[in-house]
Image 1 (spheres, rainbow, N blue to C red):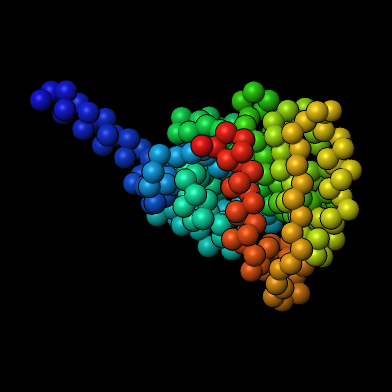
Image 2: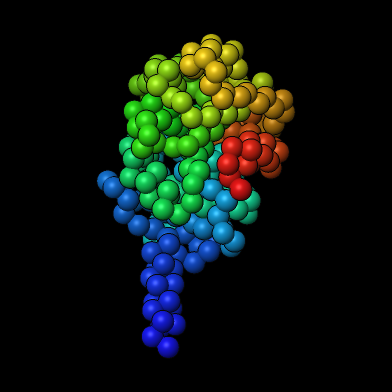
Length: 240
């Protein structure tokens, strides 16, 4: 009986710490607050989402956010594919969040979009062995914009040794994320690196913001197809 009671107490403690499956739990992780959500089955891996724009989020007590950014729109699909996910109010320093997600399930991937790709690349280059196990960079920003003072192409990617997936929309009209900027950046990774590129060729556009989430830059209308490609790549790199 004592053993059963101890097991139940351990389970309850884990549920309090992580939240119930499918329900985000908000906790302080390092210097920022983060929401963590688990799938209904044992996780196959972990994903840390890094949005574009300012890359900052407002996370409410129930774990929700009003962001309509691409990576935030696909988070339910990633959980449905078996991944534990996390997203932070300030993702500028991901050391503590990577460590936290490692306690849930490795491999830990950063899935970033637009300006978030600069944050992901900067963290992967700086953290080394304490960093992620893989990077997914969508709509990578390779030119400096008024929104951000640095971009993915300004970082020394020779320090990155983990697998990297670039996803880009050939119809992306965002001036700071041209499709032509990807190949030169890929060529700067160390020889023999596991660096892959996937192009998509269609999407919808709402409004006039070509760098916004409701555009080819944000994969509007083709989220499921892009998510499937990302999930397949992560599964091929240890998320099982």
